Amino acid sequence: MSGEFRGKPSITLTGFMFSGKSRVGRELAGRLGLRFVDLDSEIERAAGTPVGEIFAVEGESGFRRLEREAVARVLPHPGQVVAAGGGAVVDPDNLALIAGHSCVVWLKVAPQTVLERWKQSKGRLRPLLQVDDPEREIIRLMQERRSFYQECDFSVECDGLTVEEAAGAVLERLDTGATGQQ
Image (cartoon, rainbow, N blue to C red; front, top):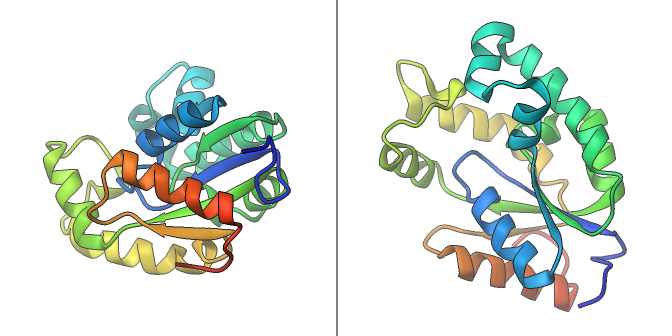
């Protein structure tokens, strides 16, 4: 596969939390021989503090500001696979930068998959799920973000897929140039 992915120099994976963006992104980058960048890790590195603390101290608006800065810093560099936070594409400036510099792939999962993976992680800190009814919040946020995710170049249904299978499905769609949502 060339260094261009549907005419773009990089690939960005987006989708809801626990959709596998980081794990699939690492696998995909390894297969393609590209650099892998996790935007949440980039935010933590730049801020010198974990995402959970950023949310606790600065709230979601403070986190989103740091996320915009990270997107602006990371996306212009070619030859990488970027795992973007699930809410990154909701910001129009982020979406413009992401779509302008990379082939954007939506890793789709069902709300129940998100809830199960969150529970399996023993409730690993996800600030947006620290609510009375995490399942209702997952469904609400997924509905709120759906139109933004639909702007991606294509999607891959990841329910029931291993990391390797999901990366393979992304590669297949990139290689064939198949268009539209899956």
